[in-house]
Amino acid sequence: MNIELSAANAATLERELAWFNTILDTRIALYFEHDQSLNEGEVSYGSIDEILAPDIDSDDSPYAQLVKEAELSIDERILLILTLIPHIRPDMLDLLFTRNKNFDRGFTQFGGWKGQSHGGFLPTCETAAFIIAGSDLQKRFTLTEFLEGESYLVSHNVISVEHKSPGEPFMSGALRMSTEYLNRLTSGVLHKPDYSITFPAKLINTKLDWDDLVLPVEVMMEIDNIITWIRHSRTIMEDWGLEKVVKPGYRSLFYGPPGTGKTLTASLIGSAVGADVYRIDLSMVVSKYIGETEKNLANVFDQAQSKNWILFFDEADSLFGKRTQANSSNDRYANQEISYLLQRVEDYPGVVILASNIKANIDEAFSRRFQSAVYFPMPDSEHRLLLWQRILGNIKNLSLDISLENMAERYELSGGAITNVVRYGAINSLQMNRNQLLEEDLIEGVTRELRKEGKTA
Image (spheres, rainbow, N blue to C red):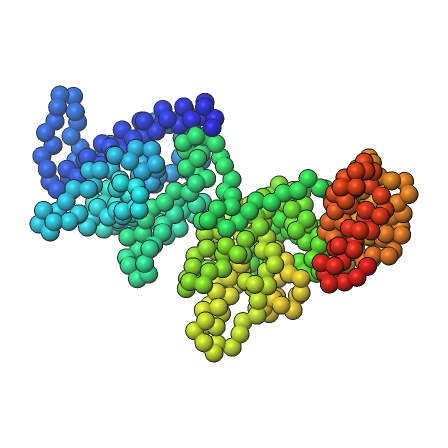
C-alpha cells in the first residue's frame, strides 16, 4: 500500500461520499414525494442535478485522476462511487433495504442483490437507474447505453455488469468493480490482475533476452513482423487508411515440437514492445458446465480489451481444436464454444498468439484468420551447439573436459530439453559430492530426458 496515495484517496472519497449521500437522500425524498423537513442551514433540492459535485480540478488523488482522465460525466461519476461504496462504506446503502409495506418486500425500483456472506445492500444497474434517473425514461435509456459499453467505465473494465440468469432484464445485472481499479481507488496502487479462480490467466515474463533465443533466420523475420505491427498498427490503420478493410489486432499461430521457444518468444515480444503477456490457463477456462467456458473466456477478453495485452494460449489444441460433426448435445456445445472463441479472437484489437505442437490440430476456421503461422523447428546441430553454449555460458564450475560440440552432434534435443538436462546434471553432480559439472552428469541428464520422451540415448 502507498500510504500517501491511500490518504489522498481517503480525503477525496470522504467528500465524494458526502455528495453521494445527499443525492441518495434527495432521490428518495423526491421519488416518494416526501416533505424534506430541514434543519437550520440545510438546503432543499428540487432535482439531484442541483447538487454540486466536489471540485477535483486541483486534486491529485488516484480517484480524482481517474475521473479527470476519463472525463466522466456527473452521471458516470455517481455510477463510479455507487459501485465502490460496498467496498468502503457499505452501510451507506442500508436505506435501500426499506420495505414496500403494500407487498411486504423490497422496492423493485431499488434493485440490488444479496451476497452469500456480505450483509449489506449490493447495487445492480436498477439501483443506478433509480438514483440517477428516477422516473425519467430518457435518462434511464442513456444510462442503459452507458452500461452496455458506451461508458469509459465499462469499456475500460473499471466496472462490469454481471448477469446471474439468462433472460432476465438487463438492468437486473450486478454492478462490480474490477480488482485492479478497486486497488487503485483505495490503496492507490495499480495492481496488474493475476491468476485467480475468476481470472484464469497468468502474467508471464522472462529474465532472458533475444540473445538467448536460438531460432532460424526465417522464424525471426516472422517475429519481427509481429513486433512491427504492434509498434506501428495505428499508423497502418489510421494514417494509411486501412481501418475500413483490415480488422484490428493481430493473430498468430506458433507451432512446433515442445521446448522450441514458443513461450519464450511470446515473452520477448512483450518485453520488446512494453506490453504485458498473459498466458491463458486452459485447465481453468474449459468447463463441463454449459456456458461456463464462454463466461471464463469473456472475463479475460473483457479485461484485456482496453489494455495493451498480448494473450498467449499455450497448448491451444484443447480449446481451439477441430469442430466435430454434431452427433450429440455435447458435440453441439463444444462447437458453440469454438465458434464463440473464433468471434472473440477475431474481434480482439490486440495480439493473440496460439501455441500448438501440431498445426493440423487447430480448427481451419481459426487458421484462415491467422495473420501468420510460425513454425518453430527442432534445432539442428549448429543451433544446438549455440543453445548448449548459451545455457552453460554462466556456469563457473564447468569441467573443461566437456565437449559441447560432441553433445550437440550426438543428441537431438530442443532448447527446453537442454535446460532440463543441465538442471539434472547440476543435481546429479551435487548428489555425487562434486562441485564441478562433468560430461557424465550431462549424459545422465540426456538419458533421463530422452526416456521421458520414450526414446533412448
